[in-house]
Image (cartoon, rainbow, N blue to C red; front, side):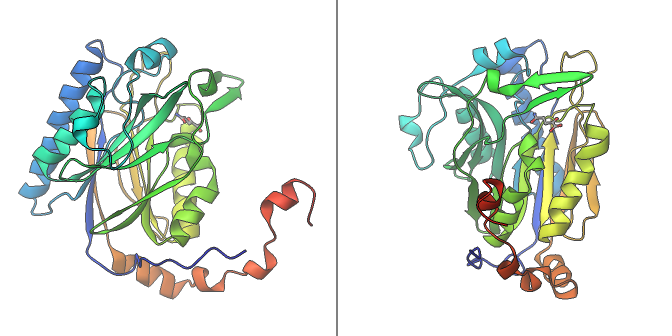
Length: 312
Ligand SMILES: NC(=O)CCC(=O)C(=O)O
C-alpha cells in the first residue's frame, strides 16, 4: 500500500544549523563527569555558532555518551526516562541525565537530541534516545528497535544481552521541520529512512557508536545511501574514539546532503561538527532527479508477504 504523502514539506522553510557533538565517552570520571562535559560542549557549540553568525538550532549527542559500552556499566548507568509530555516535576529523581539534558536545552536555548542512554524500563533496559525543546520539554523518546548483535571473525557483540528492543519508530516536529530519529545499527535498516522521508522529514539523525571493524567500509556508505535514496539529509553523531577501550568506537560523526555528499565530518577525536540543512537543496535535488514522484508503488508488493512466502 502506498505510504501516505507527507503533510509537512521539507523543501520549504528556514535553513537549519546543526551541531554534532562527538564527545569522548567511557572515561574514568563516569556519569557525573560525562554530564558536566556534555554541558560544556553544548555551550561551546552555541557560542561558536553565534560567533560565526550561524546560530545553532539543533544539537545532537551520540549513542551511550554518559558512560562506557561495557555491559556492567550500562546497567549501573541506567535511569528511568519519562514519557514525552510528562511534566519535569513528575520526572524521577533518578533521571539525572534526562534532567541535565533538559537543563542544557534551557540554558543554551536550542533543541537537543540527547543521544542515547541506558533506560531502566519497568522490566527491561532499553537503549533510548530523547529530544528536548529549548524550553526543556521532553518532546520525543525512541527506544532502539534493531539491536546490535554481530558475530564477525574479529569481533562479536550482543547488545540483546543488555537491552530489549523498542517497538515503534519515531519522528518529531520542530519550528524548522520534521525529523526522524534512530540509533546506530538502525542505520543498516533502510526502511526507517524511507518512512521518515515519506512522512516529510528533512533529515534522519542517528546517534551512534559504530565499531572499527565495519566502520571503514560501511559507516559512510550507509549514510550516503540512506540520504541519496530518500533525498533527505542524514546525520550521525558518534562518540570519540578510545583506542584502549574494549569496544573501540569508530568516530567520524558526519552529515550527508540529499545528493549523497558528505558536507561535514570529524576524524576520531573529540570534536563538534557543524552542518547546515537547506530546504532549497532538497527541492533542487528532487526537481532534478524526481525519485519521489516516479516511485512505482504498483510494482512493489507487500515485503512482509514476500518474506513469509505469501507473495511473489
Ligand atoms: N552501536 C551499534 O549499534 C554499532 C553498530 C555497528 O557498529 C555496525 O557495524 O552496525
